[in-house]
Every structure is written in structure tokens, then in C-alpha cells.
Length: 271
Image 1: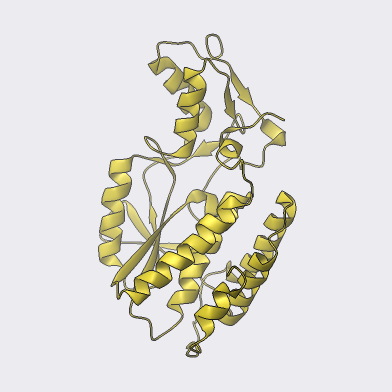
Image 2 (image 1 turned 90 degrees about the vertical axis):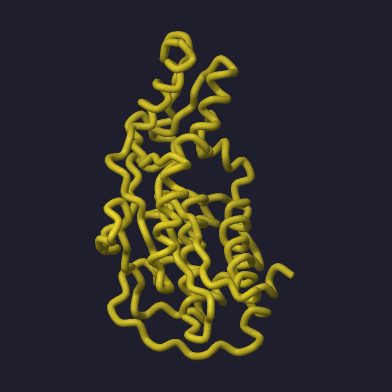
């Protein structure tokens, strides 16, 4: 099977589990220790109904912030800002440019795949604006028009090099062999967006009333105690952890104060 653009970014298949989940937890806890007022996690549309490890690990990172925010004694306010692929700096456009420069082919996951694209300037500007609105345990979406067919992006990048798509540079689609979703969305059917003072920023309410932070930390430790080497198995385990956190919050119970050893237990599995 040829390596598509997404798989080219994840040749170490389980690395995103460590980078996205443990990386987020470590930096968020350090922010709390240093007395940071706000902490913003940048997530992506891959976290919505994830079908591959990168998306599931991004969704787990979102839940990590929610679990930290459940501590009513926290001083740091947490927020997630979710948006699409970064057009002029993201993984997929960079891989495409390398493949075009090498003479092709450009490898894409699906012929009809459509993603939300955002420029670096737009992402930075809107993220800072969203951060100014956060109150704690927030999620914001950057809504920037319609999604774009990824094949159309590849064709445009080829033409920018004064080359002809499919003739000078071949485009190969993995189609049904690909794990990539046909169309990426910024929210799922259980997340409810609301408008904000900024027209391109939506706020989302999405947590279940039965979310149990203690159970979540235990499950996370179990995952890192023995990360499965099989791609499908690690994805299955992450989906199991994510299941209780998938629905919007109706009424959040007041969380109990964590013990002093809670953070030590979170990291025990990887120390």
C-alpha cells in the first residue's frame, strides 16, 4: 500500500499518542505550576469522530484539558481552539510540495476528501481573539467558509509550479484503502455551537454529565502502561476511553477535590 500524505506524517504510528496526549498534559500541568492565567490547546478537525490515531490522540488531548478543568481549585483557565488544516504551514501541504518537487506522484487518501483550510495568519489572529473570550473549560471553533477538496489543493499546487496535474505530475488516490475520512467536519452531531462576538469564532458545549475524571486518569495510565504496538488495537483502546466524553454536558456535577498524589499517579505509568 502506498504511503499517503497523512501516513507520511505518522510513520511512527503510535507517536501521536505520546506527543499529543502526554505532551498536552505535561505542558498544561507546568502552566498551572507556574501560575499561568490561560492555557490554549490548538486542536483540529481530525479530532471529530476520529478514524485514525492522530485524530483520536487530538481528541484525547482535548479531554485531558477538560479533566484538568474539572478541578474547581485550579487557577489556570483552559480552552481548546479547533480548526482545519493550516494551508501554508500544515503537514499535508508540506508533503504535497515535497512530492511535487521530487517529480511526483502526489499521494492523497481519497479522491473526494474535503477539508477545512486556514492560513497561518488567520489561525493566529482568531486563536488570540478566542483566548480573550475564554472563561475556563471552553472550546472554540474557527469557522472559515466551506471545506475544500484536497485534490483541488494538490492540483493548484502543481499548477503553481507551471506543471500539469495528472500529466506532468501524477496524483494517486488510496481511496478505500485509506483510513482518512471522506469529509472532515469541525464538530460532531453531539456538539452544539453558539455564536460569539466574532463572526468567525463559534463556542461549543460538548461534555457529558457523567464524565468521571478519576476514571479517565486511570484509563489513561492503563493506556500508557502498555501502549499496543498494533495500530488498530491502540485506536480501539483510545475510542474506548473517549466514549464517555462524547456527548454535550447537560448538568455538570461539582467535582471532588483531587488528592495531593493525583498528578503523581497520572505519570506513574511513564516514569
